[in-house]
Image (cartoon, rainbow, N blue to C red; front, top):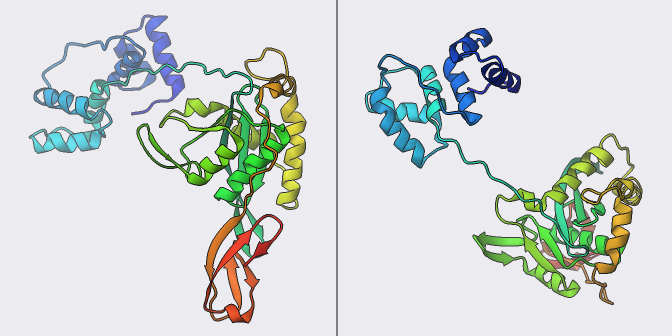
Length: 345
């Protein structure tokens, strides 16, 4: 049974400060005494055993302990059914209280504060910001967010999809604003970066590898279930959601991106830089910029190639839009080449 945090705080205060007994706390707060014992156990106190009469659960406790040792997250309802099959006749409500006291607690995990050198690392991720309606199409609004780990300089660009081409164009936009490239870019295990992963064996998306090779940076995925390793970009996405997007009006995606550019260069750059004392993000970025790698002379070409089929009518469907083709192309397959300026078939 889950109890509110304020009740847990009262239990701990009455036990430590007022020296109330478990039974007194349970009676005055109108909670079960096993709940009080569980709260005290979770706070690091040994579970207090009280003299009690023999219980119907006693013969099954060794089986319960053995099962919970193997499957510590097994639901109480499933465990209740298992002991019922072995002869237990007690009700499920009281059984839940008993299991809450006997369930093993996972050890607390400590996280180190991660620091990076200037110019060493950036973190990149997508954020979903609802949908927009364009014509008759309802499109997802995706935010590409990149943040330099040392200075916390943010780059923000909105797209109507999360395809690889948009992913790479987001990188190109960040590199153009920063006028440089970090040595390492950290990714979550998203499909645009990692196609397959088994432990430490990683199969990168070959397009991203080619792109990273062109700009001479190392693509590096975070470890599985280690969100703290990319905490800077996760906090940046929350900051974008609360500090920029909430309540904002915009005419279209181009207008939204223009506002995002002004925000990144203005309010986001003038905020205090975490872990850097009293200086701003703008000042931290000025100190970091000389340590970033130079851009190559030629930008990476990002052109989308999609094979489409032409039906009985001389039109092809691409990106939720219809494009006309010569009538001689009906019932054929065509390759569509697209960039932000034009679509060719």
